[in-house]
Image (cartoon, rainbow, N blue to C red):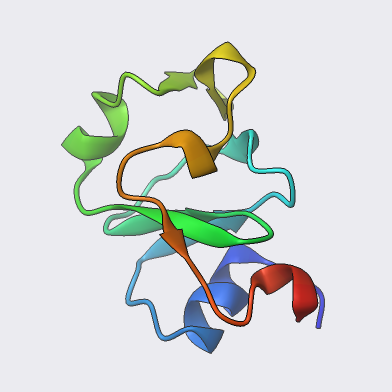
Length: 90
């Protein structure tokens, strides 16, 4: 399976309107519809509302993409959920 956020959300039955995947978990396309999620090779972080997303102190949101601040990854964010089996094995 080619990994995409949408396919991972469907596979793990996570009800979101938009989702993106990046294996290392530090760079993503901007989220537009909520609830939404970012996935990496081991889990995901969920944003229930647009406010949760835009006000996150862990993210740097530009006009086209979103980066996790300080060279961190989504795994360093509160609310990160590990998945079994991890997306890296799909």
